[in-house]
Image: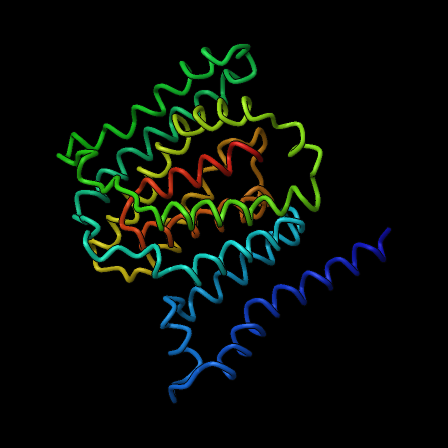
Length: 295
């Protein structure tokens, strides 16, 4: 058993290194016609050196503290977003970013965390028996996104449009995410009927998808950009904060808890890449809801 674990770790370590360094290096050597350095070439695909380190660390944390079987889907999803970046990119609209977005985020996140901590303190979620009760409990969390109005940040300040190309890429990325179930959890995939999938998808749109995308990609990421923080840094920061907020869902919080959420951090990073490319929250919301529909 121990030998099998060691072999698995070695296999996925090789996979991570080959995916992050090997494949880009080979493609650079074979297809790069311009006489530019590797890092500058990677930069053409909107991937900085800082992001390479961040991605690598995240994947290794997923390997050791989350679920190694999620690594391949995450890598495939990342590659899809890189390859099809220009199909998603919208040059007609811009992300509206003002400093008050970040101020609004600070207010919202404290209220959002307070509600979650209170729910955990009274074990409210353990007493829920029906979907209507669940939605009622989620209502205060959902309403936090309107706190931005206190600082005159309105929901219409964000872009909500989606192009067919962006939708295509989102669906493709989700299909790649499903490879996890095809290889490791086929039972869950088979048990998900179309009716269940649609109902759960609608529920996930309501909460947490819209709420979390507005808070983290809308308020936080846009707010960081308004303060002149580079896109790669802004995306990494919001991804980490997005992941950390999921620790509130744990009954017991420890150092390990902050390592386990590496999967959510990586997803937050991917959602951020989509937001920066499409300039819209809708593609992020759809992918977020799809992923949460079938965990």
